[in-house]
Image 1: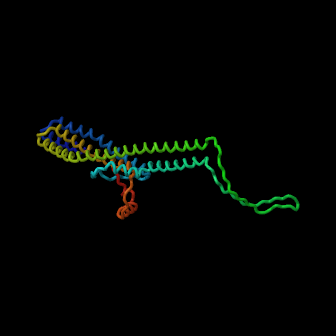
Image 2 (image 1 turned 180 degrees about the vertical axis):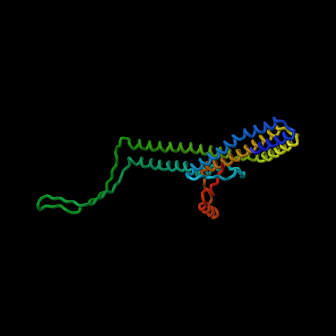
Image 3 (image 1 turned 120 degrees about the vertical axis):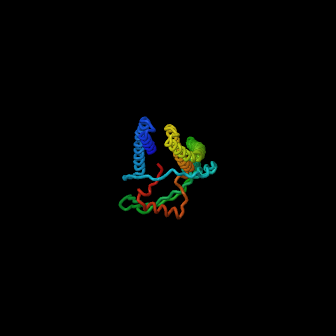
Length: 296
């Protein structure tokens, strides 16, 4: 918007000096008016994003967002290391393995249905027996015994329960194998996405500076009459596209890094150090409006 206003002012100055036509000034004015809706829409999108953030955080007060998309391309993750961490940290894999262990124990319990059983039973109480006017059997009573039972035939019920329990174990193992394959694929895709986004950021890092220099040269050439308005518009379009592509590439890189941490099961985990503990305490003491930092 500021660039278009500057171009419009330049066109009006040239028209006043007699080196430009009314058409050139009108083109600049139309460009300024056409840029206003985009500015209004963008401001509204920012307000909507802040409201969505406030809703997700569960706060009644209005929140503000500060931050930047400055990124530092670190060394790309190794697939083998990432998979190894995922196998240790993924909670759904740990849950499935615990369920498999429980199912194996249930197989043992079901297999004991047709085995001999030894029980120790004992009891103690008080009885009140009245057999007549002079006959009473009141007093304490106790009993104890050792009982052994051996099922001769249970109608193949134990065999059916064992088969069912083993089927459950086999099903859980199949689910574990499927989950392992999906985790490996997810980790590989996440590693590839980080590498791809990082390479794009590296490729576009110098493009913005070149586009800014190109626009500066085009504007100076237009002021001195050696460049046309079309050259300036092309240079401005190239700069906007370069900035947009770089911002999108940085955003994709940050998202890819977060997705990789999630695939490894290490999202939100960090090493506790004395400095990090002090920082966390300081953040808790600050008002919310001063400590909320995010990337829009």
